[in-house]
Figure 1 (cartoon, one colour):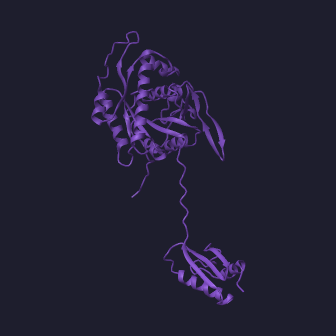
Figure 2: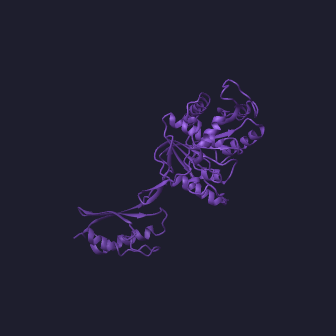
Figure 3: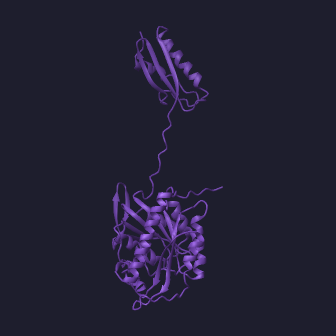
Length: 367
């Protein structure tokens, strides 16, 4: 009489894996065990094809089943490799954000934050879902530019995790370290502290679905820039400069940083801020205070687009200081400049996404 499946399992549980010292049944090495029509079948699963105990275990199973049931049956024992479970891929950070745009400058004082804020608003006015992060950890200015420096973001619990809810103004979701520190006190942070703060702003915030997330970076090249590209996949970078030679020299370094081997974030183009001075009462007059066409020449040299030329207009400065950015108001000079910039950024992002693979998060390797 042939043993039933329960009896076979009992017999096989006495076979130990010599290396692991545990029954093969406990190790999950038995599969497709069946008793039918005078035939006993089973498969032995091994983690590797060259397991040195494969033959020994198979012979011991054969001997023990035969000792119990005799020879009046057909015994078939197959050997197979265990299927390895595919590694669980970590969820893509900010998976609901279509495009992450870094806004950078080689040096301070060129109006990078002013450009970032007005670009964000111009995009939102065009019907896009937009967010902006003030990643200038040491000198956050975006809360003032949006007129929300006295507001405090709320929190929301999603699943088991707490998230920050960004402030919304002018159709833009806004988040800055400035919301969490006293603006009267200087931020004296070491690099790791600043990098940790940026990661929290990026990953611990409930951004929802966004078409564009602009990241206003500190001037120059620093740990913050590296933290950004090591934390999220940046779609592309915009570098802001004035036409002045000193600023252009630093802008060139900013472009080079994003193009560095191992980082390789596409540079969407340059923005020339303070391209010329135009009195609002004389909108057709242009006075090239910082030089004429410097960014245009640099863009041609570096083979990147010139995304826009923003004139130096008193109302732009005043609007930023008052918390009502220039792109909010339909003044002839400023609205045209920032709408052209917005249109060009959208065009370059679309072309970049059509032609190239998505940017990968930068992996740090230590030799």
